Image (cartoon, rainbow, N blue to C red; front, side, top):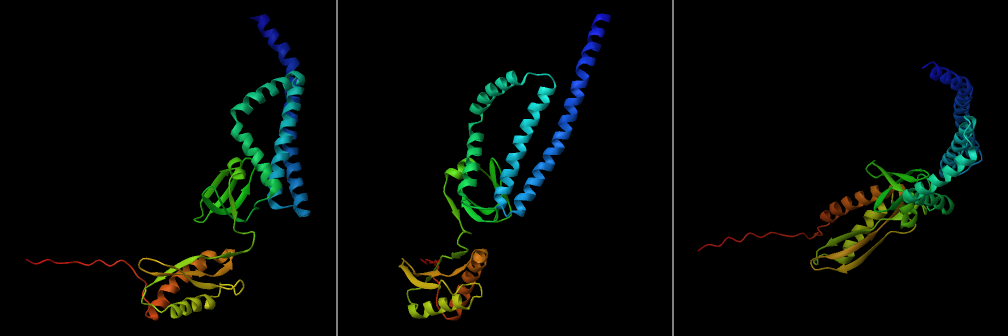
Length: 268
């Protein structure tokens, strides 16, 4: 028992300074990494680097410095870094095979940074979701949906799929289809619908709005109503023009067809 206690004392005397130094390096290192990352982001902001790239590069610098700090702490504890590097390489291969999806997401994030199909603040449609880009991280991209829900999409499938960016051009065309009765006068209907578009404050003059006969359907003459607006005004124009079309067509006595149910009472 005494021999065991003596052995423990020797180990404590031998390794305690190393542990304390390693702990000090870890604490100071984490604090320094925080300062470095914050400073690098401030420098990028002052130099006008894209907001999307600021976040991505900041995360990348943070991860790289933390890995370097970890190796330094391990070396200070007396563990051979050469053998440790071999272990890391072997473990990295195993982890890499197990986390192919995560590596694909990382590669996808790099591709998004290089080709920039969108940036923070853009309204995009991807993987069946529509939302405003909130954050582009190393592995995922976060969108804020139209109903204010958070949507997280892995960068791998995002970079390999179709992406529709509604913010690139700054304007959008609103595609509406309004059907009227076959008894309605086509010219009068076009005039009523066009007047709605030209009098709406958020409908742009250029490109000019258009109202044309789209098709002769089974029970209605369908008109293609095509106003243009700024991207931010899309839904306002969509809903307000739809409502105004019903109100103004009713005022003009132009019928919008709808299914009628006829009750037939049979008497014997």
